[in-house]
Length: 350
Image (cartoon, rainbow, N blue to C red):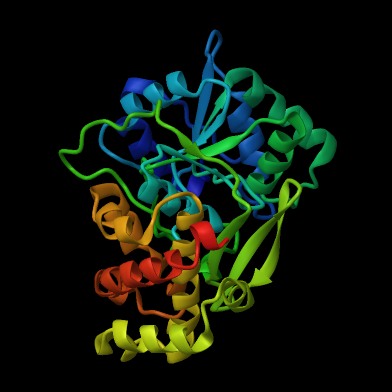
């Protein structure tokens, strides 16, 4: 799905994925008010006769090498689910992907209030029904990913994100007013030479708690499951209830975070991010990954790449773009320290 102003990118994407014989669907009202939903309705309706699944990529998606074969294998492995091959590195679902990578899972349940839509695969009969649903229930101003989330929830269709992601997001000016969100890169991609992922592996399902560093506010929170949604609570009181004190948090953060990072990111942001990292360790310990096993798990290839994007993904609105990679590299070892600390207060202590 594409806007005519991005026709060159869309046609390049079409050529790169020639094995899938993709069709380019353009915005039917390109001069109208910015809306991804009207183009999404057309794109999700363009299901080929006889198809079992329908894949929609947005014009700013950047698929990895071997994407077509990997997506087909994923569809065979989980034929009834919605499968997203991208989630942005600062979302709460991104932390689900990191938890999945640490614990060796192939999939992470999407837990945001939207479905990650830049590279999304749905069963064909589900895809065909979206246009009618949007006509009947969605306000035209609703973002397409929110409308898709509401639609799939109504049908009881679960959405999962691949671990690793199979597509990144092109950093181009937003057509729908999202530039204030900062760079929205993926959590992690396959590396050159990686074997194809085993998409028959397990999934991390919706958890009781999902840590999140709010890239918008610069604050740490924990999303606590409440029915089929999540409510927001602050991280520090939840960690304190497990026994992890503010004094220990402050001391370990001060010892672990290098001076080079403190020169480019404020102490407040670092302290809040540290809370999230410790909470992530607590959650993986609740799932059975003990503190002594975390360093080994964190250095496995997919997990290591996923952890390297956690710091820049969280502070991307407060950090110059040119510092993303360096800051991410510098914060991997501190992150492992924080995971181990939080894990000591998870598991049997929960």
